[in-house]
Length: 341
RNA sequence: CGCACUACUCUUCAUC
Image (tube, rainbow, N blue to C red; front, side):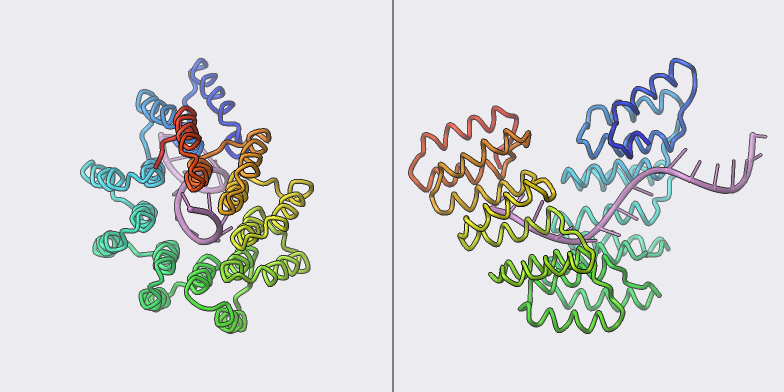
């Protein structure tokens, strides 16, 4: 419960109370905690907890291993994840489909589709059946790469295995098509999909809205956003993000500001990604005062500028020839613990 | 001690 309510510290405290009373938590409790520590990026405490487990003679399960594997993947340490899988195999464990899925996804996200395929083949070779998640991982990464031939092959073998595509599969496909086709063509394909029973959800809308924005058609994006409300879907920060970025990219900072104000007042509260878009918009126009104004505003709201924020500001300053200011910002960025990329 | 129930892991959408 603590983990679900994002109060990890309370969970840690309860664990301590249990320890003083000589009660042993189960492996499931530890797994929940380990996972929570991982997505809070509390890596040190993660390993501390991991080690504490074996001191209590509580042995990790495949769930535990997968949390570790996925953690390595999220940090981009995919080779480390791979080694870890090999190690647990040596220790006599048999990785399950979820572990393979994590590894496949890790390689896909790292852009190494051929290695992902190697892992996939190894899994099949060991007699472990791919499930829908496996196909969703592979299909979405091929979609992102624009390899629609590959997608067709995967889609067929998914159907041959008796698996039925779900919202994730279909949305991944629509997203891939949006990146490759004109929106007009996407709409025609989408119509067919809907005829065949696909129900559009808010992710589908976000994908379409993003597609139209990328095509420069912000008008249609607004229309779809309106449509969401009409059918009972609530636009999220990602929905507005797609539109705000569309407006910023076409240089319409007035409209972007208007929309930002709207969501600040009664929408989903804007995150640092939204402010980055705005900052980038102003930087492109050389309006550094406004850009820094937004930087200050985001800090005031308790948001933390990230690498993207600084990259945009530094780039904007450089383009204006303000190298000294750019340098100062880079120093400041490093000072806050960020690593220039 | 065993069993059952409940809680734990992997996939789709916005920024350089």
